[in-house]
Amino acid sequence: ALLGEAACGGSEEVPKDAVAVVGGETVTKGELDRLIAQARANAKSSKRPFPKEGTPQYRQIRDQLVQHLVRRAQLAAAAEERDIEISDEDVERERKRLLEQYYGGSEKHYRERLAKQGLSEEQARADLEASLIQQELFKDVGKDVKVTEAEMRKHYEKNKLRYATAARREIRQILLRADQGALAKRLVNQLRSGGSFAGLARRHSQD
Image (cartoon, rainbow, N blue to C red; front, side, top):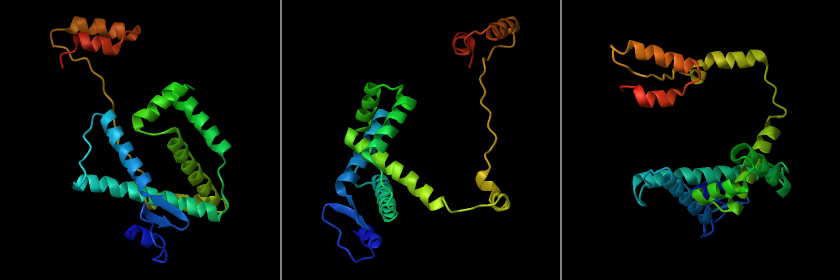
């Protein structure tokens, strides 16, 4: 209710089945329950424990999901003000693109994934629509923004630490004893000839 009052400036009552009202958009308890169920299903499929209701960890997850829904409602309200509309055809086109990219065009694999996440087809389409609205809104907001090369460089130099990534190395090793020099040479030759690193590591590595 507090979120709802903040979102609408205290001039609008939040319906009993809602957690917030943002402009003309209502964030319903059903939407929140659906996201919590989805988070629980994801945790289960990843074999991770999901916090019990009433615990600080559960409240943290719930609050993050409320913030996500409020932000999505804010974006939808802003898009409506700018006359940005997403059609069913736009959603279906994006669904097919994702189907090809992540599921090899297989409807079966796509629906299996939805089931694991606890998502219905209708909910998945609503999420896609929200994503497309956000993309179009950002395009519309930024279309008249001009940034010079000098401004970009200045911003980068001032915030260089934000863009820095610590150096990382991925190392694979087959660990042998000091008296296994001949074996080491044979393994090197096999690897250079296209041998399976994972297979050779399983058979010979000491670590």
